[in-house]
Every structure is written in C-alpha cells, then in structure tokens.
Amino acid sequence: MRKKVIAGNWKMYNDIPASVNLISELKKSLSGQEIKADVIICPPFTSLDTAKTLIEGSVIKLGAQNMYFEENGAYTGEISASMLKSAGCEFVILGHSERRTIFLENDQLINKKIKKALSSALKPIFCVGETLQQRESGTTESVIKTQVTEGLSGVSAEDLKKIIIAYEPVWAIGTGKTASPDQAQEVHKFIRTLVEKLYSKEAADEIIIQYGGSVKPENASLLLSQPDVDGALVGGACLKAESFFSIIKAA
Ligand code: PGA
Image (cartoon, rainbow, N blue to C red):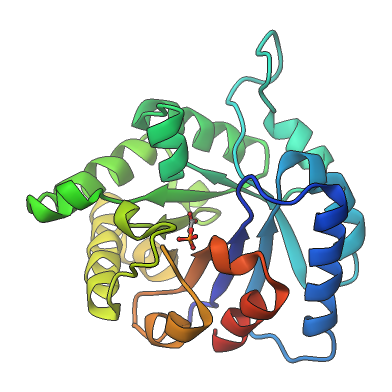
C-alpha cells in the first residue's frame, strides 16, 4: 500500500511572521491527531530556516519550491540544492507549471534540476501537466509522456524511488476548476503505466503520484479515493491551516 502524501505549495505567499502564524496553527491542528499521511510544507525560501525550527518534533516535513542545478557560482538570484539541504529541506518542487510558463523552464532544464536534487539527497516533487488547449486538442497523453520521459531521462531505478510525481493539469491550477476524479485517475493510471514501461512493474507500483489543481476540503476525499491518486499538491487551500488540515484528514 502506498502511503498518501499531502504537500502544501505556498507559492509566493507569506513573509516570515505570516509563516510563523501558519505553521503554528497547523501544528495546533495536527497535535494529538492520528495522521496517516505524510505532510510536507513548501514555504518561500526566506521562511525555510524559520520553518525548519518550528516543525521540529512535529510530523511536518519541509520542502522548497525550486532550485538551480549548479553546485554554486555566479548565478544571481538562484538557490542551490546544498543551500536547501542546509535550510532543512527534504523535498523540492521541480517543474511546476508556473516555472514552466512564467520562467520558461523546459524539460531539459527540469531534468538537470531533478538529477542535481537527487545527487544532493533532496527528493524531487516533479510536476507535469497539460494546458487546456492541449487537453482540448486531444494531446494530453503525448504531452505528459514527453514531460515524464524527458524529466526522468538518466534517472536510475534506485533514484526513482525518491521521486514523487505530481500531475497538475495547468487548467486546474488556481482556477477553481478541478479535474474530475475520473479525469485525474485516467492520467494517473497513464503515468503509472508509463513508469512501468520506462522502469519496471515494481517501480510503477511504488511511485507516489499526487494530484494538484484546485484541491480543496470539498473535493479532496473523492480525488484521493481514486486507486492511482496517492496524495495531493495543494496551492490555495494550504494557505489556511484549517483547510489544509481538512485535506490531510481526508487522506
Ligand atoms: P492550487 O495550486 O491548489 O491553488 O490550484 C496547486 C499548485 O499549483 O500546486
């Protein structure tokens, strides 16, 4: 049985005081509860160090939202894998659609980042997803196939075990439109079958595939009850402790 993984992508929200508040509230909600899912928060870089201290002794794990693939150097504005490690991160979101569209990241760049994260003992949350136009023109599967195959190029079977794939249809992110449970399941199944072809049945059975895109307390249970949906990557609804906690409970 795959354990469900619920991750909160804070995006560019919450300065340090607001981060302290949100984490304190989340810890209050979680304390004394039997939590069956893994819980990850991904605050902005500036709040990571504070978050690391605050989550000590709780079930909450820490992730970042991006990184660069070089070890260090003259890359103004960038953050390295070892910097994230030293700030207490265990995970890093890579290939998010906002990085792909606004910051023009392509599959090759994302692949380099994934490999660097893995060699630095960071676990990638690797995001893939089609746009509305791609879905409507019937190319969802080929888009996902390219993103997954290129993103995982050169990644060993051993390293694959450390990767979480997040299926996030671009048209569902921050729009309030969610993929229906059937639509999500269909693509998750497609990704799992693709992993089987690229690696093995065992790898496909083990890999965690999260769904992301307007996950909220009201739709979480149905999405998470699909056989190939192993968790959620939550944006908007993770910014309030109460709604993030409801999603964790649903898992
Ligand atoms: P959303 O964002 O839940 O606000 O749609 C999800 C994400 O971008 O990871």
